Amino acid sequence: GRSFREGHANGRVNIELTEEAGLVERSTLMAYEIIEFEPTPPAFILQFDDIRRVLRQEMRLAPLARGIMGNAQQPICALQNLFYFARCVKNPRWLEKSDEQVLQALAEFFGGDAEVLVPAWTAAHSGLDAIPPDLPARLRHSRLSSEWADCIPGGPQSYLGILADFVAARMGVLRCAASLPRTGVEAAGELNGA
Image 1 (spheres, one colour):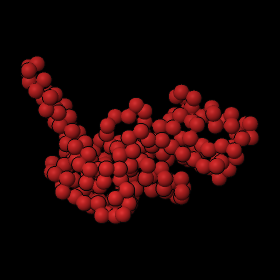
Image 2: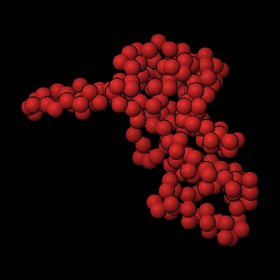
Image 3: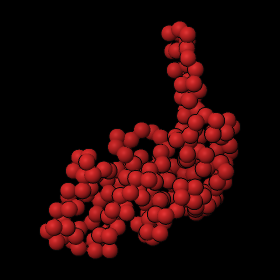
Image 4: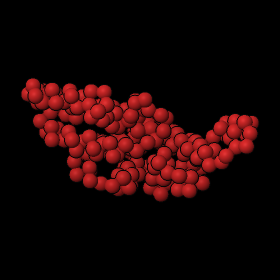
């Protein structure tokens, strides 16, 4: 196993030692925290750059090893990262795809509307001006029609509801952070609303 970063926890030490001992062929590579950072917030966060960085470092060993794996504690919130990780491991050419291309492919994979899903999946990194004000409602009224969407734990409508709740919470926090309360009571009210 290796950590998220080289200078964090054990970095790449375990993989380097396995390589030095000639045991890569008897090992499975574990790319820890690239699908979902730990501790993870209850948020839909894209970790595509981390997936690209780590897999580019480790893919030279993948053909020798018994496999490569990652982990996620909250797979619902990390579905976009699980999808991208799996695609990259199966076909390293996916490492060259842009975030937009990956999210478009994921929307198609689920049989959903990319114009609704992509802004939701990128909301954690977007400002309030980039999030359509009606996005939570549009998510709740959307449908995911593929057979793969039916495999989402809890079902596709539950997933869309969780995603809508996340987007609404993100918008509330951004609205709260955009204003400067004049009193403690006003600040508490804004914080409670967010």
